[in-house]
Amino acid sequence: METAVSNQETAGGQVTVRGRRTSSYRRHEQRTAFWFIAPAVALLLVFVFYPMLQAFLISFKNYSLVGAGDVFVGLDNYTHLMKDRAFWGSLRHSFYFALIVIPIQTSIALGLALLVQKPSRTSGLFRTLYFIPVIISTAVAATVFKLIYNKEFGLLNSVLKALHLPTTSFLSDPHTAMNGIIVLGIWKGAGFFMIIFLAGLNNISPDLYEAARVDGASRLQQFARITLPLLNRTTAFVVIMTTIDAIKLSGLVFVLTNGGPNGSTETVVFYIYKQAFTQMRMGYATAAAFVLFAIVLTISLIQMKLFSRNADE
Image (cartoon, rainbow, N blue to C red; front, side, top):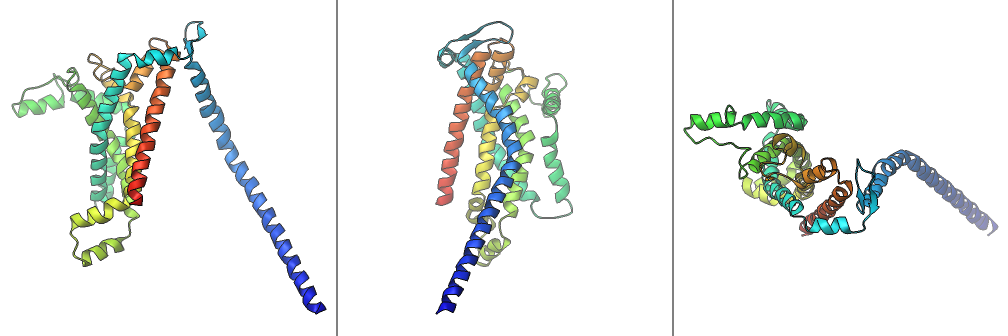
């Protein structure tokens, strides 16, 4: 009896020692993890969150980069912004760009990923060719397309002349200028999202396609019943990122049209840039930036909700 009790006490002591060791090991892991993430957190606080807080405070002021004015005006900047037709016009241009680019660019990126997915002698070459526009500088790409769109000696009008079609001043016409930017935006961004889709396609097990072929499923049925559903999360990422990139479009507009002609290509980010650094209305521009932030955040949350609901179904 005494032996059994002593054995139980020994076992209990061993369990206690092991528990203490486990607890000590976990605390050590937590401290180590904290020191690993501390530099990143510090950088975020200093270079992201603190500037955002300062910008939010500036949005309630009549703040200028060149003047001495730093007057608190409350919600006046936001109130005037809601009545500013130029702001709403620029927002409409951004949404027009996004509504055209999102479905077309996503479809092209998925199609390119399907084309280069299977390993072959030329697949590596075509992957590189499709990705080259991504690494080309925005200014360089926009300058080249500006030459292509030129009415006098541009490649586009040269092709139209060869086909005996009427030429057009592509970037000087308010009805076609935004479409020229859309073409450039799709050409430049499709390669990046092709890589994202390619990673998603490579994560789908080939056994699923083999089983579908055994059951007599066609390629179209395999694409609709296997590929698209299993790419749901990848598609969600691509659509959300494309939406954000499209709404914050500014670089291509700056180089190609500078917001013209007649403001027909002035996007909301370009409008914010003009208010801040051309008219020196930093407080007003910051208020517009936070309104844009709220709009983009709302759209992203809605998209995430829709895609998560489709994934659950």
